[in-house]
Image (cartoon, rainbow, N blue to C red; front, side, top):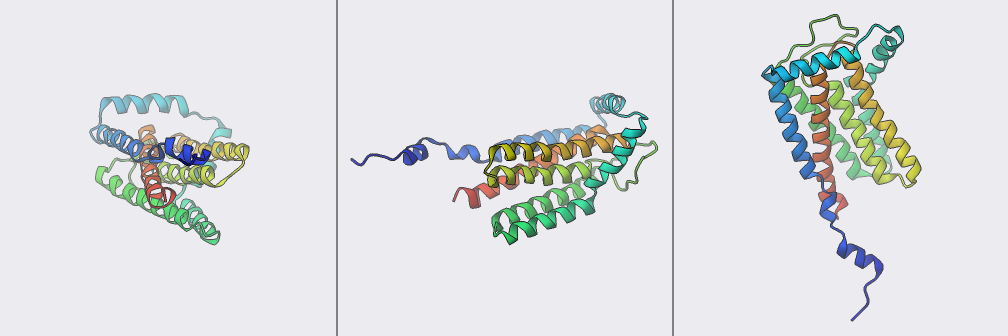
Length: 222
């Protein structure tokens, strides 16, 4: 009997299905659905959650106000759209066509669904003075959905394409900071409730995991 190579032994003992993200995607979708129901029904827990976080985050510090009103622009629809188009083009130039389709498809699905759910729930924005201009309904935060999805995609692409472990770690930390800070600024600028931002993150992560599951089954696993 021929002796198995080390690589063959590894392939036989590794459960490749663990790389699929459909199960965590389902979990995040269920959490997101429950969160959306609580928000749309005006649940008291959401009210207390928003009130507590607003009290912790918002203040009149001039330096933070300057930062929040400037940094929040990175999550604008136009900025996210241009960044996505550039990323897709770069991936196409380097012939990473599967990753380009993954990026474009995930962003379109996440932001398209966000538009639908915003109008379905129709939550009004906080009735206080807004530090930046904001239009449309409040839940979920479009800035949070867009940034969580885009920078989540960048994290996945970094993990898959960057070889150096140190650089990979640094880039992933940087990508992670962007949506967190953008979500923070939306609350600080009084244009979103904290529950809007949490809902946006949950939605963005859900679509990110669904998109990666398609990428895994139709490209990575083959």
